Image (cartoon, rainbow, N blue to C red; front, side):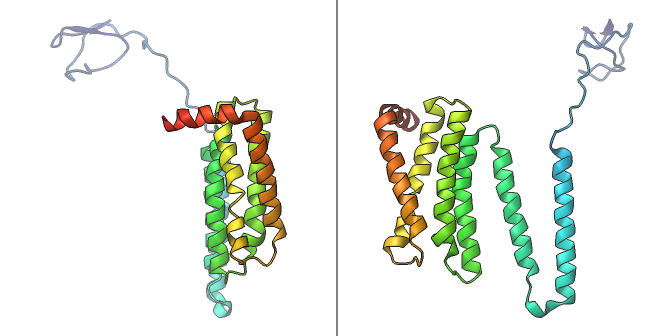
Length: 219
């Protein structure tokens, strides 16, 4: 075992100098007390790098073509914004992959904001509020219920997320009552399904939901 005369301590392992005073040590080195752990490669590292390379290549090609033929305006910016939106949503889903319910809630907040921004920047035809938002909210409700069923989650792990998705289904009623829709059926269906889902949730899981709200809100 190694020994540092200056510090008066014995050192295990193999080293040239004392880690305390950086002085010379005497004695015979021995095997390290802790084995060296091999570096583990990230399973998605290669796929992420390849996707980033393809994104950079696509942006470069589009920018070059747009620069050579600028008659149609700077459409390259829309391509960049679209790829950025895709990376943002993919990053949210990947970041919260260990908790599907949190991923659903984050997507429920991010996707409507991006969709409304895209509709506004392209002249606000209304496709976002007429079709995309009600259909997307319904998909998130199905995703939350399906994930809770498939993963066999406890009520405390999914009730709050499912409630948020159901309550979000009534948001399309705002543009509907304001007369801003030219296609009312998706919003009406979304609100109707949400009303039925809310009734079922309160009737069959009302006490568990109340307990979860009290616990989360420290009431």
